[in-house]
Length: 111
Image (cartoon, rainbow, N blue to C red; front, side):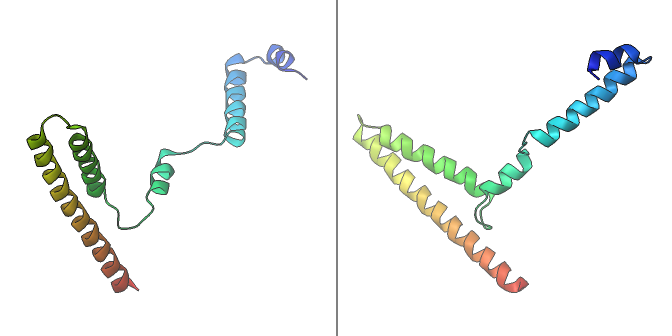
């Protein structure tokens, strides 16, 4: 029996539309693969010690590096940006080592 025949026999059209909508949504959920944003962010976190502050710091380091690399006309400005880039990179690497150590320490204390 096709849908138009069922719809013409149905007295309560609103109920028929609601039933059809639920059936269609159910079929779509079973057929189409959906990726939740919650799982996506968890998949990108490859190491347990990585934090949001490290992500922000990394973006800042990359911005400083690009700024330093694009400065070509003025040697004084280039050297100051180079120095700032290297100093910030040292701090970033220190923060990474600190987070790794803290994570290992927590892991050893738990097990």
